[in-house]
Length: 114
Image 1 (cartoon, rainbow, N blue to C red):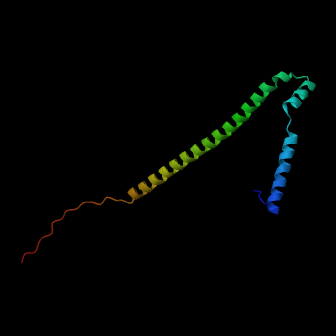
Image 2 (image 1 turned 180 degrees about the vertical axis):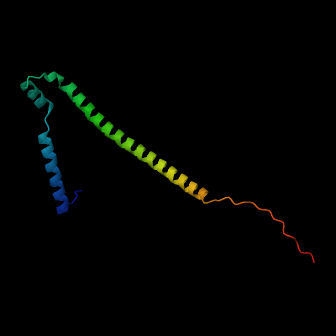
Image 3 (image 1 turned 135 degrees about the vertical axis):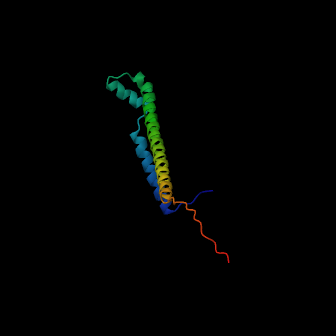
């Protein structure tokens, strides 16, 4: 069973394939990298270790970025909690300041008996 494509889908597929081709052409295989290292008078046997270090650095950058976002989130939550606490305390203090004490008076009123 063949799937039929619209003109728009075909255009999107062509664009995607072109992007993949450009990406693939920009990438070098390990043999090409080894040849470049030899031309630069660098030891090609260190290529594997260099790739491992590069991957570690990239993973560390991702982890640090993630940690920054987590830190910002925690700080934001703490600020909201502190601001809410201050707000509610001010509301309570405001309500308490409106309460006033009055003097208690007990008076004797002569009762009229008649």
